[in-house]
Length: 81
Image (tube, rainbow, N blue to C red):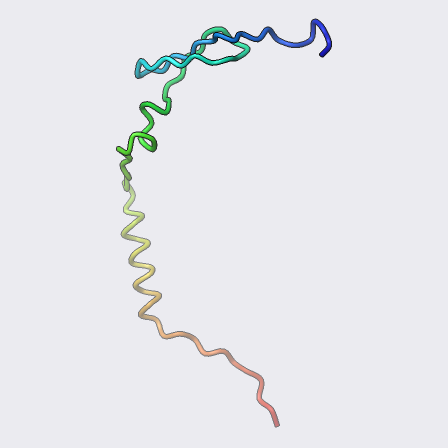
């Protein structure tokens, strides 16, 4: 490793989340602040909510139902003589 070109590594860096969770880890910054972490992220907590503001799910279901109603198109094949 060359000297004087690498950032200082802090083995006891502290990451503070907006929810109050504190994580101790190694990093090149001594203190960091994050808005969301694994303790408060909906995916990890199991409190995930799906927000459908534009009615996308209903639009998709309507398209699928319409496609099922439509008769399948027959392929125009070559005729042999």
